[in-house]
Amino acid sequence: MDHKLFEQLQKEGIISAESAEKVRVISANRLFSVHWELKTILYLGVLLLSGGLGILVYKNIDTIGHQAILAAIALGCMGCFYYAYRHKLPFSREKVPAPNTLFDYILLLGCLLLITFITYLQVQYTVFGTRYGMATFIPMIVLFCTAYYFDHLGVLSMAITNLAAWMGVSVTPLHLLSQNDFSSFPLIYSGMLLGVLLIAAAWLSDHKHFKAHFAFTYSNFGVHVFMIATLAAMIATLRYGYALWFLLLAGAGAFFMQQAMKKQSFYFVFIVTLYVYIGLSLLIVRWMSEVVDDTIGALFAGFLYFVTSGISFIVLLVKMNKKLKKA
Image (cartoon, rainbow, N blue to C red; front, top):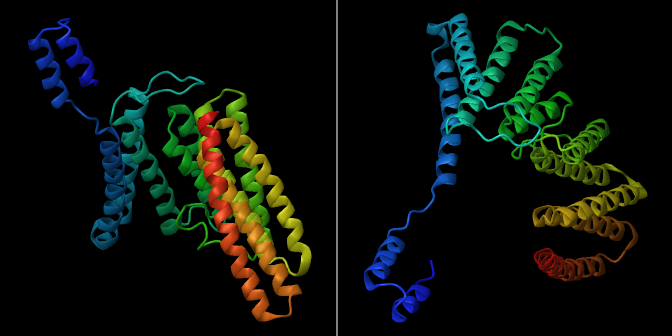
């Protein structure tokens, strides 16, 4: 609120001293939003409730019984989906807002219970036998349908994670690098294919105007998975073949950069530039290790490269940020 403007209006006699005082009181007691804080607490509450119930069941499984646990999980899951179905707004190709504050969290809890139920069935009763892919394929289909039907980005992320698990790739932020064997080329190819599929899904969502707000989530997963898989291919390839993988990385980086500039997204500009910089550094370091015989000279050249390239990387990002703000 512009206090100087009201003081000027009071001096000019346009508003009274009482009115100016009311403005100052209202400004001093102005409400502030805790929307995102509450949303974060509610999301954490759902996750903690789901995790806490799992621990409670695990510690008392001998006294509760498997059938009783499965029945309780199924009832909870059906209750959450019934609530979501009764309160949802009509379906639309565009973004549909949640009908109330609790809607998103109850639906998310229902999806977590669904995955828990299917996993429990497979682990305890092996209902899918040795066809382990079915244990991820069925939740994946249900989660994708749920995400689109109820318009829920959190459920969409869970569906993409299940799709990746079905293809043998882990895409959660904590497990993306630690639980993937990127020295295996079949896994690398699966990661690249998954990345291309997700980027294509983002493009279709955007250009067909069908849940266009899902495009960011698809792109976020797709760019990370594809670029990491390509970097892994550079590392796993022996001799000079890694240079060909760098060309693919650079070409993909140019495409993603063009899309990021079009969308004016500094986040994608940053991550794409970072991945290409890592690939370029890997290319130069591997080339130097194979060509340069002088160890001291190679170390000095490497140190010089990382200092100059690191500064250039930061300067480039600053310029790109300014360019995006001016656009």
